[in-house]
Image (cartoon, rainbow, N blue to C red):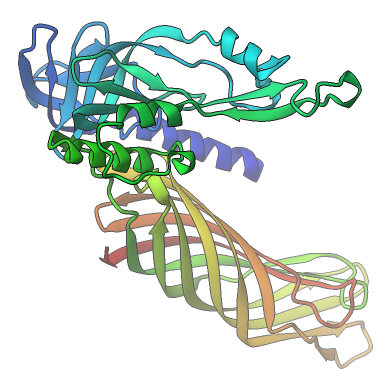
Amino acid sequence: MPKIPVVALLICALQTAAFAQKNFLPGGIVLQNGDTLSGQMDYRDWDVTPSQIHFKTGSTAATQTYTAQTIAGFFITEPKVIYQSAVVYLNQESTKLSELPTYGSIGEAIRAYRPEQDTVFLEVLARGQVHLFEYTDNNQNHYLVQPQGDTIRELVNRKIIVNDYLSSQPVYRKPMQVSLQPYRQQLQLLTLDCQERKTNFNKVSYFRENLIRLVDGYNKCRKNSDYRKVSPRPGRNFYVFAGAGHPVFTIEGPYTFQNRIESPAGIAPLLGLGGEFELGRSRGRRAIGLELYGSRFSVERQADKPVDYITVYADLSYLRMIIYFRYQLGVGRIRPYLKLGTGGSYYTQHILDYTKDIGLGTPLAFTRKLKSFDFCFTGGLGARISRFAVEARFEYGTNMADFDASELARTSIVSLIASYQFFR
């Protein structure tokens, strides 16, 4: 079976396992009559706000499914997460550049604005004099506010195309993308009674942490702040890893060989250190990392040729550094992930010898010069449980040949690696 379909099947299998895996954490639901029912919530650390949630009253109880139409809200105890059900009006205009709505003028865009009603779960970001909520769909992040005792309204942030933005003269008219940001005026009006807070609303950006900070600051100014969502700081961890790989050394070229030779090289042990840094609001799902490790292997291969007989010997020892991107495929006790990276290797030993017996008696001995540095590309599939992880990795090196441009000498390796986080 081709390698690409195999990798695709492995990724699909890991994703299926991740989504099938349950992650029940202590929490509860709020019924529509205001009563609270404690139990366990299947927490998925959602990137997109869920349309339904799964809850059970105990570890052995049956799992029940609820929607925003059937309960008033739900919560997770740790990490602290609160969702509230609400009927809201949301901006459903596309944010994709190729699908932005087009209007003849800004005035027309303002007059034509029609948010759509929906019943959804809203994540509570702040509570007090003003409540702040977030709803995320496949299109964008929506932020909503509710002054105490009032209705919930979206903080409107739009991107549109306007045909006559530059000039009133038709000959100079040119479509242009325009950002309409009435949310700034909405926030300014909401916080007028707290003048001691010096806020430049023209610089308030439509991002979660900025809006939490502004609303919570206003609530504290009014001495009415009940809750503020505390987002975890991007984490970092350092780990040691070890494993073994099955390398393949590939050589070819008109001066050396008539055909390509791929030489399996037995087992190559490897040992290294790594560090990983989570990205922004990804809650550990996305991270970049750096690894430094070493390995050594040798290969001796004999290959029959139409006109000669060749014996190849290679002895390679290297230090390799890679930078990678990791994406976690799911949440739960077992957390599968996909890793892609690139880097370079420094070869402390790079010997390539071969002999050619062309039927004239004594075989001819040759030594080919190899570069002491190459680049590599790497990809891995793995799973983490607490501090431990197991990963299957494939590495593909660039050409190391340094004798003739038409020659090739390259290593590739498939490895199985185990790691342990000693600091996080």
